[in-house]
Length: 197
Image (cartoon, rainbow, N blue to C red):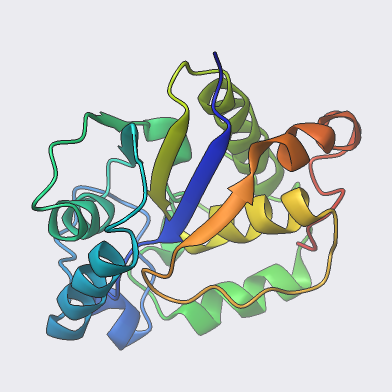
């Protein structure tokens, strides 16, 4: 048996989100805001009638805190997949997100942000390999709570479109795992097949 149903959600709002700052280091304290905790509770209500065989988060406390609040009343096995972590930001860590956006406008996906050892392409290739492993798991229905960039990549790839998608905080998106698997041939050739860097 393999994963047939994949529910994905970006973590709820964190303090760094409100400040507009980059956080790619899971050891940096970055808890949910009060609004984020409300969003996580709303996610739990939205998923109350859904069968979930496994919950997956990243190493970042904001993903685990979202899952803990959303699934507080349910006994669901959990797994942390560090391969799905948000990428680090090198010398831009803790800086305004706008600085990262401007840097990316001037550089391609194969350029290293100063202080980093992984390019954006390498990050997506790592993320993609982890998603393949995730979809091969034996659980039928999986909830993944991760980060904005990875969730955007998954949704666009499953829909086989490079059109932008609106990814809110702690909003569940139901992906057909077969659609995502169907994109593998294209993604094997180019991890950016359905994603604009």
